[in-house]
Length: 223
Image 1: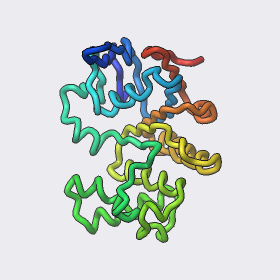
Image 2 (image 1 turned 135 degrees about the horizontal axis):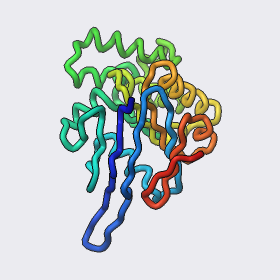
Image 3 (image 1 turned 180 degrees about the horizontal axis):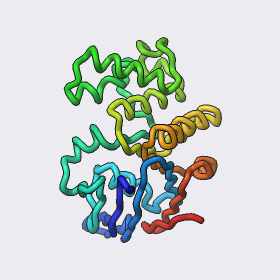
Image 4 (image 1 turned 90 degrees about the vertical axis):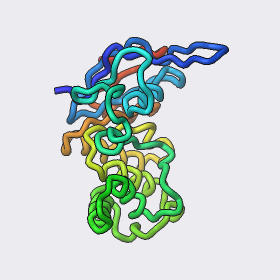
């Protein structure tokens, strides 16, 4: 059964000088337990698509539907806190918070008590193959691979059913990149999450269960 569905979705940027159709009449259904790769050249609409799936933007036409509710009709802040998580290339960790505090942060926004939040954050950090030694370190004290794992742990600590990853290995070397992809695949295949990766990397796309190619705002399933 589909968990996230695009129904004739279009998105248009407008200003006084131009009109850009970034996404054009896209329909597709995403399922749990699979890794999807969205590929395409810069300007093809990938980033806009990710923003629509995350509820950061609302379609100009059509609907993005999570389970049975359109993002245009839901509390999108709650949606991003509890149901969908976004992992960015730039990590986006809070520099003045420790690794543990970064992972605790989404739980604190939900009103989880500090003791429970600390315990859940610690378990999540260890689940992405990091040791307790990193708990008290600030982001600047971590390697790129460690920072991305903390970013993943923070994204997952609220137990979202959909994980969106925007070029998650773009700042990493080959070994660390492979480790991150392995974690994302495990989330789909072992934890039954829906994982959607926007990437320029053919090696990542080859490991996805489904590859979608975007061109000029349109999307097609690759054979």
